[in-house]
Structures are given as C-alpha cells and as structure tokens.
Length: 178
View (cartoon, rainbow, N blue to C red):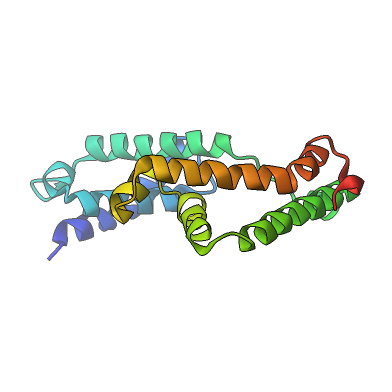
C-alpha cells in the first residue's frame, strides 16, 4: 500500500541525525514524525523515493524547512515556570472591576427584559448572533429603516438605563455603580 513510507522509515535514525545536526536536541523525533505526516498527506512518493532509495537531498530540505518553521514558532512563545505562576495573585482591583462589569451586564439584561418581545428578539439577533441590519431585514422581510430605528431606540434605552454606571466603570469609580 504505502511501501514508500516503509522505505523512508528504514532510515529513521539517519533522519534523526540530520535534525540533530541542525541543533535540535529536544524535539528531533517530533520533527521527523512531522516530515512523515507531510509526505504522507501530500502523497510525495515521487519526490521522496527515487529508484527504491530515499531522495536524501529532498528529505534534507524538507527536514530543514520543518525545523525552521518550528524554530520560528518557538520564538513566539515564552515558557514560564510553574513556580513563577504559583506566586501570581489576583489583584483586588481586578476583582472589583470584574464585579462592576458583571453588575453593568446585569443592569443591561434587566433593561432588555422590560422591552417589547419584538425589540428583545431584534436586539438578540443583532447583538448576540452578530447579524447585520441588512441580513435581518432581508431574512425577516422588515424594512431596513424600521430595524435601524428600533435598534437606535434600544441603544438609547440602554444608554439611559445604564449610561451613568458605565461612565463610573470607565472612570474606575466602581463604588458608585448600583
């Protein structure tokens, strides 16, 4: 079936040595496995095997490319010791800020519950489902101007109900939020 993969696997230790020669001592096995996966997924038999023997030049280039890709990704992330994380604490300011934000969200929800069901549904579709006014208009066969005016009125009602508390939140005056 995939005899060419078996031919490559016979030289596994050679592929490991190539990756180690690039300077990778920890993840050499993973890089070679990634090579096998890439070759298999792209069905690269003609490129990998020539006259029953591995195409060492092609394999070397492939391993080098996989290694360089891995090296670039490795530099994007910083490893942190678990010991360093244990010392982190959650700041009291953050707790107060989070609790204040939760209060504002609750106030918004309470305001929305006082609305007509049409307005509630329209708001839900627009905000929660992230549907544009045009999409809502075409799907519900309601004029775009009607949807615009309804959402504009809804936003105004939220601003009146929660605006002052939101200003307090932005000004970090959490104690003033209802």
